[in-house]
Image 1 (cartoon, rainbow, N blue to C red):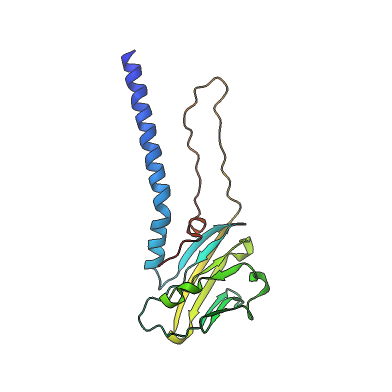
Image 2 (cartoon, rainbow, N blue to C red):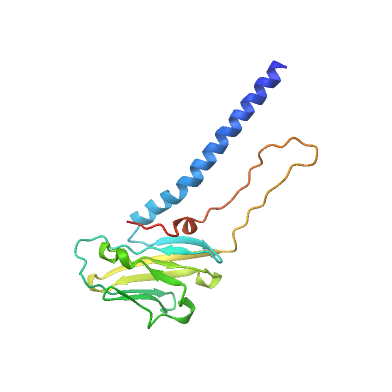
Length: 185
C-alpha cells in the first residue's frame, strides 16, 4: 500500500511540474518572439494572428538621425495603402478601403521611431507581406502577416466512472494576440 501511495504522490508531483513547465513555456513564448522580431530588422519579421483578432505589425527605426518631421508609408503586397503617417500625423487619404477603420498607429511613439500599426478584425485575405517605409532616412521594414482560422480549444472529459486526471490540451498561442496593446519600446 505504501508503494502505491508513494507512486501516486510522485505522479501528482510530476503533474504539477509538467503544469508549471507548460505555463512557463506558454508565458515566455511571446517575449522570445518579440526579442527575435526586434533583432531581425534587416530580413523582416513574421507576425501571426487569427481571424477576427488583431495583430501589431512592427516598424521601429532605432538610429539617431530620425528627423523631427517624418513621413512613413505602409503598403501591402499589391502596393495598396495600409496606413500613412505624413509629417507626424496619421493620414488616411490614400488608405485602401479594405483597411479603413481597421488599422491604427501609435502617434505617441513616433518620436521614438516606432511606426508600428495595429490591424484589427483580421481576415484570411489580410495574410501576406507588408512593408513599412520611413522615407527621409531610406529605411524599409518587411513584415509578413500569417492569419489562421478562429482560435478554439477542445476539452476532453474522462469517460464516466474514470478518475479525473489532467488531460493535456494543446493550444497554439498566437503571439500577435498577446502583443495587442503591447508596445515595442
